[in-house]
Length: 261
Image (tube, rainbow, N blue to C red):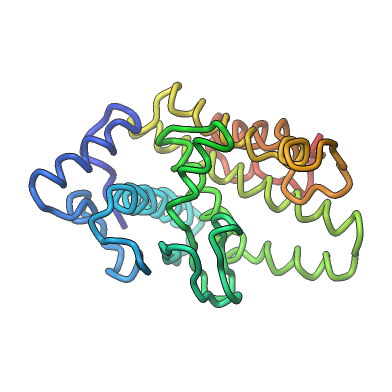
């Protein structure tokens, strides 16, 4: 388990950590003294010293610290996921992963897959720049990992197979919103450690709003079809991310037992 970043100042603290890493030649993961195995972050076609790759590695290590503590409080151990950074395409346990898919989590191999070019798209296409916006993307995919190791994902998959149609999409939305809330839970504890400031959190909230199904459908097809949503509206995504940020409680992320609107 990691011990927390040794410097504060919001997400800027992570930026300073990476600057220190560049000046000293030390791996940022070594600096924060994480005991995550070397294979926790894999790169396929991404330079090991890429600044964004280093940033994402630090964020992943911090999510591991948070979820290790939460699982320990429940007398359980946290099996950390592996992060795979790639360019254009890569093979995953769930089949071929491509940049056009955006970041994704594969429950079959318990890995988070991310093409760093998505962050440029998050800024230029979706209008959601900023370090915490990028950290939110990683934390959301880690949220899907939490759902896998706690059995939520398998139960949702079974329910979707029985449901079909609109109900199948509704279950998918609730699963995605829960992952947003889990990302907020991580953000809550990152803020308590001095890694996230109020302005940082707003970056994540803007990112959540930017990738809501309603906004994406309006941009691509000129109209919105709510029954076809698979990830939730902008308002829903912001609300559940904010709920996790404000409460820091896993129990507050029960999107299946609560209405999403």
